[in-house]
Image 1: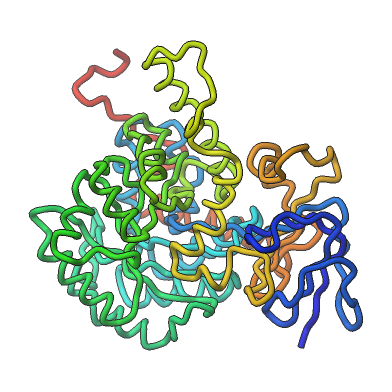
Image 2: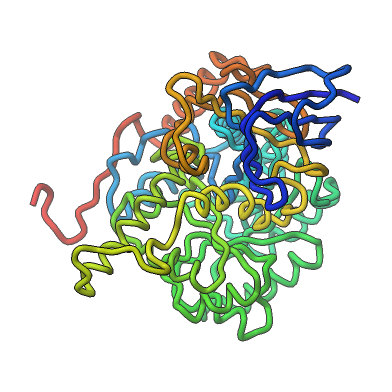
Length: 461
C-alpha cells in the first residue's frame, strides 16, 4: 500500500475535532487519510514538504456544464439572456468524441484550480455513446466525479435519438448498471430532472420516482418561485434533490429546504454577470438552515475553479447586507448579531464540507481527518506570506488558483509543485480548439462572434 506524508503543513481541516493546526503532518495510506498530527512516522512514505503551505480539503464543484469548455469566453460580454441564444444552439453539433474532449479539458482545468470533486450537469447527451464518452472523460481525468444525466435532452437544432424525459430512463438504467454508485466510489451517477412547473409536475413526479428506484441522487435548474413547495406538497422533496441556482425561491421554498436538511448550490459569477437574477436567496436560505454549496456553472464566461466563486460571494453578500442597512437608515452601517451574514469560514465550508454533503458524500470527502478519502490541496503561501487571523480568510480573500501547488484525489497525486501530472497540455489545448472549430463550422459560427440581442430596442440605443 502506498504511503504519502505531507510534512509541516498548516492544516485547515474543516473538521470540528481537528480544527486548524500549524506545523502538522498528514499521513495518507492508499486512498485514505490515516493520521493527522505532529511529527508522524515517515518510514516507507513519500514525504512532501508542505512547509509554508496550507493543507485543506479539495474543493467541490456541485454544478457545472463541462461540454461548454471549448467556448471559453464566448459570452464574456453577454447580457440578459444572451447566454441562451449564443451557447445552447451549439450543443446540437456535438459528437461523442467532441463531448469527451471537452469534458476532459474542463475536469483537468478544475483540478488544476484545486477542485477534486465535480458534478457535471451534462446537457450534451444525445445518444448512449455521448453518455459513455462523458464517463470516459471522468475516468481519464482521475477526478472524483458525478455524471449528472440530464433528462431534458434539449437540442435546438437537432432531434437527438434519445427522447427527453422518460425516453431516457432505459439508457440511465444501462449506465447505472455499470456503476456501483456507493458514496466512496470515484465515479457516480445522478439524474438531472426536467422542468418543475405546474404544467410539467406530472413528469417531475415520474422522474423523481424513477431516479430513486435506480438509487440516484438528483438535481435540477430551480429557476422559478414555488418549485420546492410544489414538490413538497406531493411528498416528494428530500435532501437527495439538489436545487441549482434558486434565485427566485420564496421564503416558504427555503423553509422547506432547510427543514428537509437540504442544500442549495449557487454559482455566483454566472448568476450575477448578466444582471437578471436576484441573489437574496443565499442570506434568506442561510438564516433558515439551508446549507449552501458552490459551483462554476458555465465555462463560456469564466474560468473553472471555486476560488473566484468564494471571493465574489463573500463580497457580494457583504455589499447586500450593507445595502439593506442603508435602506433601513443604518448609516453608518454597524455590526450587529446576524450582520454581516457570512464570514470567510462560512464560505470555505460552502466549497468543502457543504459541497460534499450536498452530493451525498459528506462522510467521505470535504474534511481532513482520519478515515476520510485523501482528496487534498496544498495552497502555497511562501511567496508573500500567510494572512493573519482566520486562515479561512487567506483562502477566500488572499489566494488565487496560481497558489494551488499540489492536488491529490483518492490518494493519487494529480498536481505536484504547480504542474499537472500525466497531462500533455499542448495536446489537450489543441484538441479543445479543434472541437471548437469543428462545432463552429457545423453551426456556421466563428470565434468571438457574440450575437447581441436588443430586446425591443434599436441597436445602439
